[in-house]
Structure formats: structure tokens, C-alpha cells
Length: 170
Image (cartoon, rainbow, N blue to C red):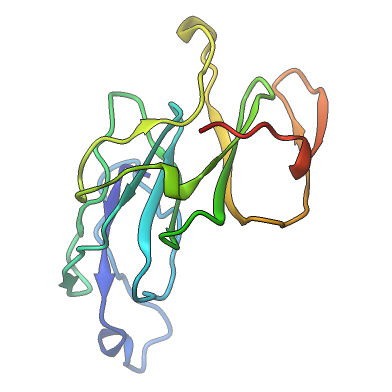
């Protein structure tokens, strides 16, 4: 949630106990995603304040009790809502939805790759900060994918949008 990323060797998980701790989290932090490391993929983050970042995957392997390293730099009161490994191509897109029902999509390849721990670029224009608009959902899709999004906004309004209806933001 607060931008930390960690790589763990599978051998560290081979023991007879049914559960164990694999990361030290700071207060109020939480795990957003867990994936098996895939070679030649970049790390991609989307934050609640509408920032996205694509970084090279330079994450050292740590032991089970370590806390990891900074994956993305965050502003005050910002947090990661989506993190995943992505292809370095022009066929993968990120789709994001704001709390006010604004949908946006952008090709991952159009986001400049930067070093781990940096600040990203604006993915979506959010409204007046006093209204607390934020990104509530993000995912990556492949070019040509078909999908239907159903979102319930904070006023209880149900919004439907097909992937083909979401404007491309480059």
C-alpha cells in the first residue's frame, strides 16, 4: 500500500509450518499483490492520486523477515491501489476508474520507464482536491481484450462501461 516491493526466494518458504511471516509491514500498511517473478517484465504502479509509474525490475532478494525496498515514491496521503508486472510493449494498457466514475486507459509503453523508487506521471485528471476524488480501481488489459466494467460510485449510482467505450489517454 505504501510503495514497498520485495522479492523472496521460494526456497525460504520450504518448511513444515502451515503459515509464516514473509514481510515486515509498517503501521497501517498492507499487501496489494503477490506474483511469481517473471523475467523481462517491468513493475507498474497506480496510486489513489492518479499517478502511474513503470520501473525496471531491480529488486534484490531479501529474507523472510526483511521489509523490502521502495518501489514507488508517494506524496502525503497517497497510496498504491494497483501493482503488477507488465510487458514492455505497446499492446498492454492500464485502465483506471475514479471515485466520480471517470474512466481512462493508457498504453503502458507510453509511460517512460524510470528507476525503482521514483515518482511517476499523471494517469488521470482528478477533480477538485476538496472533493476527495481518487482512483478506486485499476487493472491492465491486452490490446483487443473485451470487457465490461460495473462500478458503484459513492452516491450509489451504478456505472457501466465497456472497454471499447473508455477513452484512450496518451
